[in-house]
Image 1 (tube, rainbow, N blue to C red):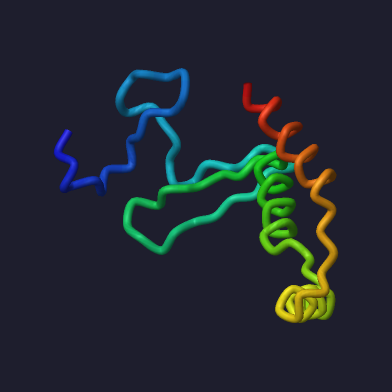
Image 2 (cartoon, rainbow, N blue to C red):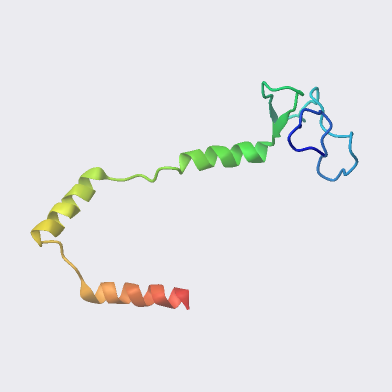
Length: 103
């Protein structure tokens, strides 16, 4: 197949290796699934399952973790002024715990 000329409408689908029997431009999505049709030639169709839509939606929600900007500014100020308390024993214990997870 010439990869520079992909305007044919016959594509292979999963589980079907015979050329010429694939998804065509007029294919309908099963119930509960969405279709998107690009504006290009050939009428190819993209189908998203409900699981894919759910994963996409949850990914968009978790893109930015919540950050308390005021608290970050307070901690930065305390560090700059040398008044941020550091518990050396707790820090050492946390480092040891982390190292044990890596082992």
